[in-house]
Image 1 (cartoon, rainbow, N blue to C red):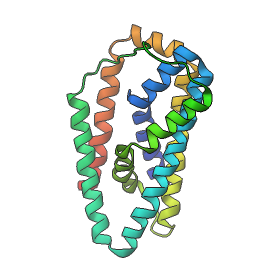
Image 2: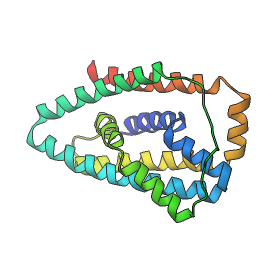
Image 3: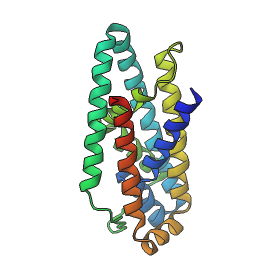
Image 4: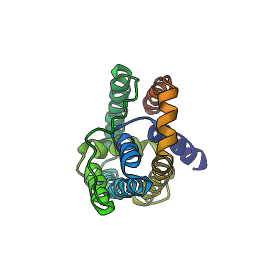
Length: 204
């Protein structure tokens, strides 16, 4: 159980640190408007994760109860999706582009709402949770719904720490990324390794 959760936390940490639309959005809002506004965005994004966790928890738990073979198919499809994501990352540009042009001033509530809607209305997040979370179920005795919520809590906690740090240290993060051009390349390969490793563990 502990080993599985540690693996999940490590994988989540790598994925949270890796540049993506969400953390780049947090970074730009923090640089332009200040850390308070970046943190408001983070709170919105993390609240959206609760919705996705709930959808996956109840949906997959129902499938497990009704048909374990179908759950196996979901895990295989999840592994395939993670391999697809690894391929997408491999084909993507490793350069981290930070543009603060046309970043409009919004209130903290507006940014909270924007972060929430960005997350909860993105079907790719649900698909990712569906592919990622079932691979880390850690107990045959505990309720699967409870396990999903435990994983969701750890995912949100780790992501909040990483995204919150980006918001608070936006200026320093921006300077570091500009001075260390290869950071994007390292994070790109770390992300690929995580996706491929989880997929291989599922399929072997």
